[in-house]
Length: 351
Image (cartoon, rainbow, N blue to C red; front, side, top):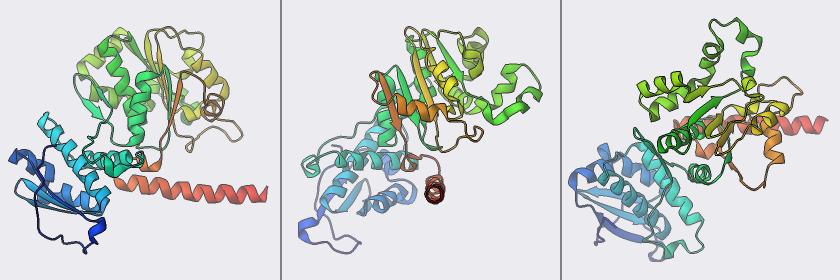
């Protein structure tokens, strides 16, 4: 642990009974790192207070922490993890603090005796390329990254903003850099474009490119832009509309199908059976955002039902609590989901 425990003064939150109060001071050796850890105007400590219902007051390069036993130890693990991140040359943003808190809470939720694990350190799965390292910010992201490492076929499903597509591209870039695969193939259905796709200018790649923009953006985050452009020209990174997959066997490749909720049953079966020797396949989508014509079943929804429990396949389901964009995004997702749930219930009653 990076800090030392000392005696401190009373907290500014309402006093707790002796039986449920934990009280200590963490002292960090490097003043500059401690300042970055606490945040401008101690904003990171305020976030800890808000999320964990503790009292955290900075005193130079120390922080006085008061609260119940479980949450103060969660705060301790969070700060130790973030300080270690700074020592390794990283930075600490608000999103990093949010992620570390989530992981600390989740670690305790999985322990039968969390108070016995005071000195346990946080360990978060990560994806690393030469340009960037992405560390899991939620327990589900952690499970997703680990699933990508061990399984040849992974489904990442859930609402927008949970990082499922971004992490998939990061993992594919990592595999390419390691030499574990020879190419990356990016694909998605263009259902939302309908017949308008044919009226867009340019060849098929130029027509589909706008719909693959999130995948491109993630690629440029992981790999220098000039290398991405050269890889596309050389066919090492391939942008392939879903319809062009038929008849191919995709070997020695990392294959990503994005927006998979807009595939039909036949398209999904066709895509999944393209998996070849030494290939990794990642399917991402949001079953609540289906743009298929009314009455057409989503291939993603069907695949999740049929393939659940099949050996070698991992299914990771993200929730609104995994949204890592602006906090409002998570609340927006919850508002829509609750409304849709009520409407669906009313419709089922009428039927």
